[in-house]
Length: 154
Image 1: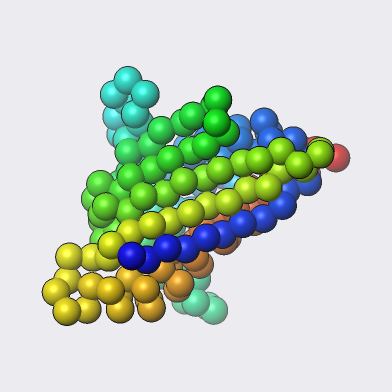
Image 2: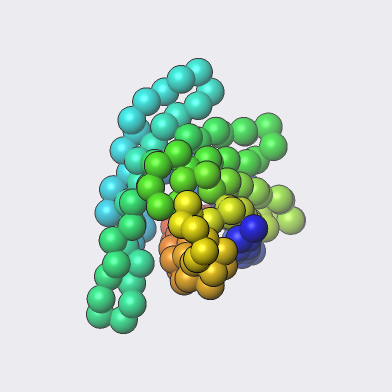
């Protein structure tokens, strides 16, 4: 099972961090590595969002794309995703936020069994997709959300 964890302490109140993390349709406006986020469907508490981002490699940018079911749990300060299309189909993602004084500890956990590729499923997930693509995009997303909410906290 591939598991990546990105975490950061954000110098802003938990409610503000949560609102920015949950407002995914605005991410392309505040996060330069996001190409687009589109709300495709709403089914009760579940939103289906199409997301596309760039994974930069120096001057080169690799395009990525996925479709997710998304749940916003304001009572637990969590945003959850299940990837339902794209190379990362089946991936589970949880954004969690814990208040710590006037700051917020944020973590993003991605868990996944890997792509449906016989023989290279685990190496592809654990050696390439997880550490290079998932972590590469998630760490930039978390840092960008932190910059945005910390600016507003001043």
